[in-house]
Image (cartoon, rainbow, N blue to C red; front, side, top):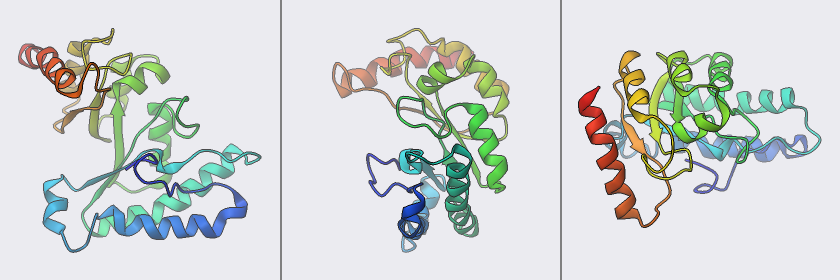
Amino acid sequence: MTRERYPQALPTDPALLEARAHGVGLMTPLVCLDLSIPRLIQRLAEMVMLGLTRGRISEGAARNQAMTWLIESVKPCAAFARDLGVRIVIEPINRFQTDLILSTQDGLAFLEQIGYDNVGLVLDTSHLNIEDKRIEASIRSAKGRLFHFHVSDSNRGYPGAGHIDFASVIRTLREIGYAGFVSGEFTSLPDAETAARRAIDHLRPLLRQV
């Protein structure tokens, strides 16, 4: 879930500590989607994404303090999710959308601070293209902590619309033993159906080759 879908982002303003606690209280039941539908959770691979829900650093707040607040907010969600057999994925997102956890290395450092093995990363090729020096090296560094993977091209379009080498990306995912889903998260241009079809047409032969 992201802030666009769920506007109650966890605040990092010290004046809003009560609101932040309220946000954590709202997030914990959402981690399991709904306790009345555990079978659906299993069908969805027992995974919930915390994307832009983490918010931004508030004006006047130090980065270290903001990260401390974020860790304190996510830890109880992680514990709650672990007890239900649910995984949480954190997505490193480029600097134009957030200022917290931008690169793969940022994400891995955050996982170490959280300290729960049910919390991992979802990497997105478009964000990797902006924030990381080399996409393949970042994927390798996330071995064992990569729970999900998004594909979009360098221009946020469907795979094949930009310059990312998806054959190399797929080879690297196989190299690290990644066995999860590869899902498209790209702009719906020229329209959703055409973009989806072009993505499939671009990726399918690559999946067969490597």
